[in-house]
Length: 226
Image (cartoon, rainbow, N blue to C red; front, side, top):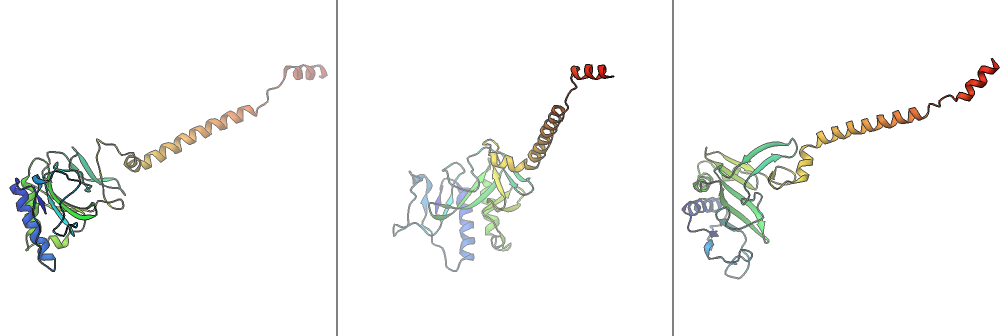
């Protein structure tokens, strides 16, 4: 469990979340606490007492503390979550939009949960941890997805971000595959119209070339015969 101990909101959120894990698991959890500010090389995280990677790892860190292969990259300035089937935008997030965020992913072969926040309000991560840790709501056992967010309206949402479900895009770093998916119907229509115009022009040229103009000598010969 790697925590930025300088952030009270992160400490509180991590405590709530560990309570959730303990209740859902069959055995109590006794994590090894590591202060984030003591880590110099994020590519080589501390191992457990037997010098092996842990079964899973909890990161409670500010959004720009380190770079992880998480479903949502928190070091970007703007992102969107959309449905690739109907191209509907489900979430549009600016850097000032406050919400707590919890993400599940694999980091160097270890299942990892990253508890952090987006926007300027670090207190939102504690709101998310509190919502998950409330035993009266049983919220944690009802969630399905690899990203969880809690907004300032106390609304908790689950996002399943993957190639077959929802997707996340960063408009500042243009992804041409997403652009082609989003405007696929428009591009097909324009291609059909352009192809039709080209085919019509080719048809007109061929039809004109098949019309043989009458020779003036032939006209003179016909007049003399008459």
